[in-house]
Amino acid sequence: MSRRGETIELAVLGLLHEGPMHGYELRKRLNLMLGWGRVLSYGSLYPTLKKMLRGNLIEESTSSTVTTSRRPRIVYQVTDAGTREFERLMSEVGPAAWEDDNFDIRFAFFGRTDMEIRLRVLEGRRIRLQERLDRVQRELQMTEKEVDRYAAELQRHGVESVEREVRWLSDLINAERGLSAGQPMVPPPDSSTAPQT
Amino acid sequence: MSRRGETIELAVLGLLHEGPMHGYELRKRLNLMLGWGRVLSYGSLYPTLKKMLRGNLIEESTSSTVTTSRRPRIVYQVTDAGTREFERLMSEVGPAAWEDDNFDIRFAFFGRTDMEIRLRVLEGRRIRLQERLDRVQRELQMTEKEVDRYAAELQRHGVESVEREVRWLSDLINAERGLSAGQPMVPPPDSSTAPQT
DNA sequence: GTTAGCATGTAAGGAGTTACATGATTTT
DNA sequence: AAAATCATGTAACTCCTTACATGCTAAC
Image 1 (spheres, each protein chain N blue to C red):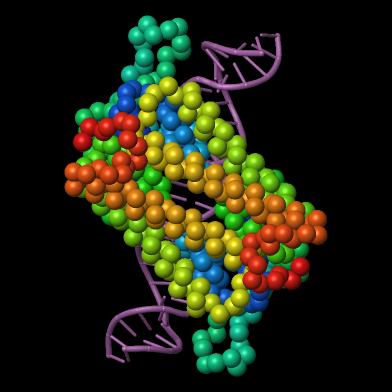
Image 2 (cartoon, chains in turn blue, brown, red, orange):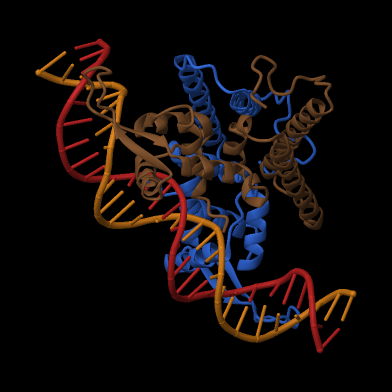
């Protein structure tokens, strides 16, 4: 339960939905997508792909077609079972959905989820962050010790960052609600490109 | 080389510097200190403490003294070797010092480092983040694909977060420089407590 | 021609989590 | 008396990274 390994699988399933891809490209896209910090290694990606093959979530097909003269690369694509698994994972609500990494990857694929789910995940995430803030605030009060200047600055910056993310989530939630009410006052994330909703 | 395991050790050494502590309390302080996300488990802390004992970095002493009627807890304190190791780790400059977790813990103990080191670590961290930004920017240009609305919003928020952290670092660097020039215009992190520089 | 980047993998090992196991002390 | 929280540990397991191994293709 709550295995973190699902994160990569979900990301792979989501990316392959855009079309067949080979491992090397998958890795680059993945790193661009959740690359704030972590960089996925081959030693992690390829075994995962093998595992997903065994699980029948994806299938491989050496790109034999006369594209160019390139070395035949192993191209992966989602199966029906894979699509179903993607939908199952994306409709999960609960702790697994709003932990740091899990949340990011789910958010990235929100375009393929119901608004109901989106709202629940966004709210769950916000509650989780708010709890963290409250806990830290509470524990800081209990600590009578006057903290070191740099340690305090780190705390302050951390709190500010989380507060900022809470505001971000609140804006997104309001935007989603605005859409549901039929009056998209603040065009949610971005107003330039209209999604396929 | 670049073993991440040093992070906990460094944190333990740094915290014990404030005075003897037992495992349970150490864990709480640790979680408060770098608790933005990760929560350290006992299964991780206690073996580390044992390892540090074996390495002679810390020593234990059952708190036999008549404090209260409490169960005798195992209280750890740093040895001379531990203090030296702390200083060695804190004066490291290089990738190991400015990776996410490593940076945070080092920053928290900046009060016990030379300004020269502080500046180098802050600048190293800033460069690292700037590189990330540049890389993402570059890769986004190469991607001709128009990205999904939510994926784009995630990117935007990520970039903004990192840019914000770069500004934070710049302010800190300027503050440190201001101190060195003898004119602490913007009293760096906090003006209340003066460190023992 | 040789370097840099594309492309795919495997083996070993590290770091840390989960779950289990145990028991004392404090609060309700 | 029960529940919460303090307190210390161990064993198994998972996930991931590092380092190694291999070879193609494009650019300089």
